[in-house]
Length: 390
Figure (tube, rainbow, N blue to C red):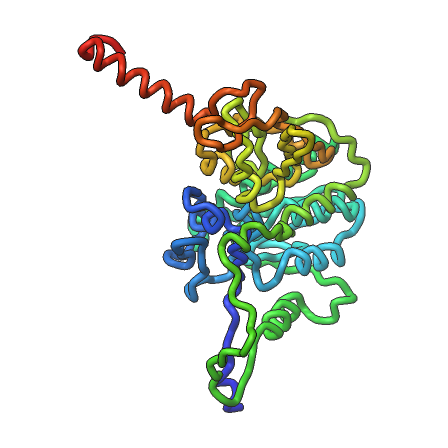
């Protein structure tokens, strides 16, 4: 029993900084996780990336809010989806509630903001007539700051259902009296969901009868990867992968265009101007691999996969030439159709002044040298004309 004193609990949310916008680009102002975290100080911004502090109460709102899937709760989405599938009864409503809503429900979560679009749509995938989120009101809840997140997930899930021809009312919110929910249990579970969750959490514990020893350096040990090596890797955004898998399996889905405002939606409609020089910074920093370039026979092309884009805006803020613009609206049906769009295609040239490469039909100066040339000309005119003309 003395070993219980040495039990060390893993933090309830793991961070994969290689997928974090703030890690990949210091210009990123993303604060999606902190914006919905109801516990002061539980999310800390580092020089690069974020960390989850011990104050975390495992509500899961930060993981739901992160479009890149950089935050992963101790009970992952795959485990939650498995619980949902075991309880779906085709042709009936699937009811989801937080721990403050009264009534009999199919799934209880610490907070509705733990939900992702993939989890909301999982019962529909399994044949549920509709999905109902029971709302006891968040104003008096200690986790109330997270409420906007589940409301965004609800709205986006409804838009996805509408795009699929299933009707936005397939996902609904209903008022519920405050109280204590009674959670349904599949007969195959054998134990209550609370015990199952506790068992899953216990598996994350590590026990030791002796204090941990510091790791000793090993001869020939591989050094830690550099930032450049880290960002060049393409780690899977499992959050998006799981959503695409659910959308592929929605019964009777007949996708059609459905435009929504881009603000707050984990998608983006990219536009690239002629200022693009083909430097590939956007591609390198993109956390999800939505941008890929091709080169051959002196020509350059930049391809875009909208279904992989999470709207993190790294490409936009990192572009030195300000060649990338995010559109005000986005079509959610791209998550069904999975198109590949060529944003730019042009010959690659070499600037005779600075020797840097750029894109364009002309063999003249690159955009930067053109700007410098214009500025020198303006200065010369001012000197000759005594500052009377620009």
